[in-house]
Amino acid sequence: MSDALDFPITRSRRYWLTTADGVGIDSQLLTGPVPRTTAVVLANGFTGTYRSPHTRALAEAMLQVGDVMTFDFRGHHGSGGRSTVGNAEIHDLEAVMVRLRELGYTSVATVGFSMGAAVVVRHAAVYGGVAAAVAVSGPSRWYYRGTRRMRLLHLGVERGLGRFFLRSFRKVRVIDREWETRPAEPREVAGKISPAPLLVVHGDADPYFPVSHALDVHGAAEEPKDLWIIPGMGHAERAVTPELSLRLREWLREHLPEEQAEEN
Picture 1 (tube, rainbow, N blue to C red):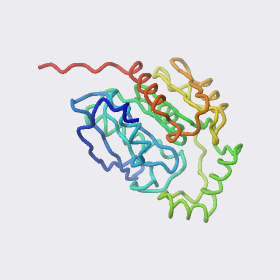
Picture 2 (picture 1 turned 180 degrees about the horizontal axis):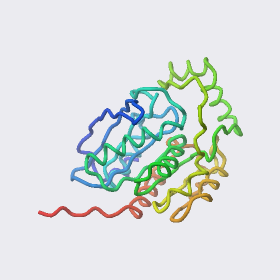
Picture 3 (picture 1 turned 135 degrees about the horizontal axis):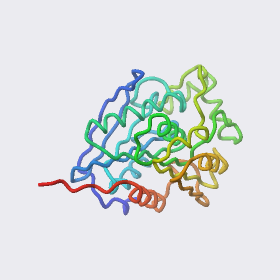
């Protein structure tokens, strides 16, 4: 994706954030050479981290749209707490949004992948305040076990041995109990995102969630909304090609307010 980087990073700064329920979140803000009021937040999938080369490449591609905030969800890598696999994580995303507002950003888009896509949809519906939302490779409903990959993932988070593997080898700490209250599913709340625009992106070769998940979320959403089904695309950050990253960037540029020149 090196050819996507035509807006160079001039500064990288880490922030330690605290969520409304008291969890510490490790985040990093990448900025360009001039002050801006627009930002893009990237929300990784389960076991992902802002330190991965895939997320870094996506962040570099999005820098032409605005400054980019990346972070680790609770229970992931440098952040505190334990992962709830998409439930309480909306508070993590809101902590990022609060910090960006404090820093002076007035237009913020959220872009999520897999678990992060479900979080982006729910956050935009529950908290609001986003200028645009993008959900890539996301589920439409909870407890889906219709593919082999998802059956293995459930074994990983529901059994002690699986959680030990995740903690030891993927630096992910997962809760050892079921959700006390089931949160609303992405397909149940997508209609509340409007008037902010929503883009749903899904690959027709996704080994985790079939295309029907994207159709359900998009179908439940109100206008303005877009749906991209990408031929041959797999799952989440790793499946995003340089061409798709540039297409995502252009969609964000079309749907976010233009930067206002500062008065001298």
